[in-house]
Structures are given as C-alpha cells and as structure tokens.
Length: 93
Image (tube, rainbow, N blue to C red):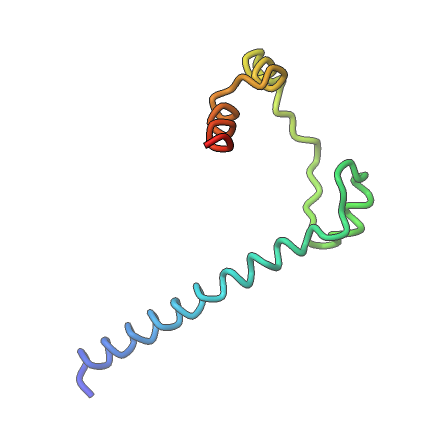
C-alpha cells in the first residue's frame, strides 16, 4: 500500500467516525430534555442540587443581570414590542 493510499484510507476513516458521531447528536439532545424532568419553577437551590447531584455547578454568588431597561419593562407591560407584534401578525395571518 502506498503512502497516498494509506493517507486516503485514514482520512475516509476519520470522516466516517465524525459522521457517526454527528448522527448521534439528536439522541443526546433528547437526554437534555429529560434532565429537567422532576424540577419546577421556583424550586429551592438545595432541592435542585439534590436533583442534579454532580451534574450541577454551584456558583460562588448568584448572577446579577442588572435592572432591565425602561423600554423593555414598557414593552412587556404594554405588549408593544417588535417581537410580540411579529408573533401577533403571524397568528392572525
């Protein structure tokens, strides 16, 4: 077997392995959905930590995203945002 043939065979093998790996991605994504089963909104941190076990990462302090902008608050309260208008337009059409 020449060096070129060996190189070509190695490349085809690597591409085939990568393709097989990518074919399993939807199955992995389904597992993520099931990960949240048994949790609910507003659950205490201790309960979430018990549920997720070693899969959880405890942060040293809570994340602070800051106060929302007044424009965002107004858009949420009045329903007057470009995103909501687009959804309403699609629902009517």
